[in-house]
Length: 312
Image (tube, rainbow, N blue to C red; front, top):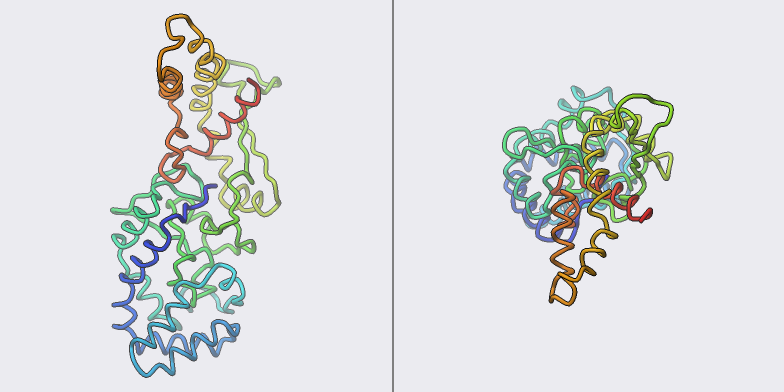
């Protein structure tokens, strides 16, 4: 639900390349064997040209130059590759064991460093869980490696994720590449969460509040509702939603305006910024820093806050 900030993507790509080059050189023979097999499995011209260039390379520099195009293939280029017709991971491990081995050998520390550069600490799929880069880091292969072995090492195919999202997504086919958090047109607002009072319910105020989801397209609905089942997860955050409602009922823009116009504060230099900061703290807002990939429930808070601002 949150696009990865690509502001520092150049540095992140350089870090990944420096990390992966030793493995590409160490496993050159096996990797070329895998690539040739992939070529025989009918790849598109873009990938076929890369494979041919790598096989014909007369030195390590040319070999790496060819593979760099594969490692940093764009999502649009990846989408041109047809799925490999196999029966799953065991077949993949046997047929493309070198590619898979390199993927396993590239340690979590490498990705921790990369994601620190991109400031990704929260799973971009759900925005509901921290990513543990120390012990349980998981990288989701957006194009499943069992079906697209040639993309196993491609940078933009490796999406940092929490264990829940990686498990739920599994090898399910995704046809819309704009659902990849690296995609420039990934739409943060394609899903909107809204707190509503369900008048058909009875009980405490917490029992009356419902969190509803709106989707701007069937692709987002299919992926986030049916595959990841995020609505089920977020239903457990009603207490957080209630806290936001309580806070916004008090510390809203109208309240800030009253404070700033009060005779005690009027004409004091910098008072408006001070009041705004004070109210933001009182709201416990995750959106204050403007860093969605570092603050858990950022998306939920942002949607609720924007709904409140419409009403004020």
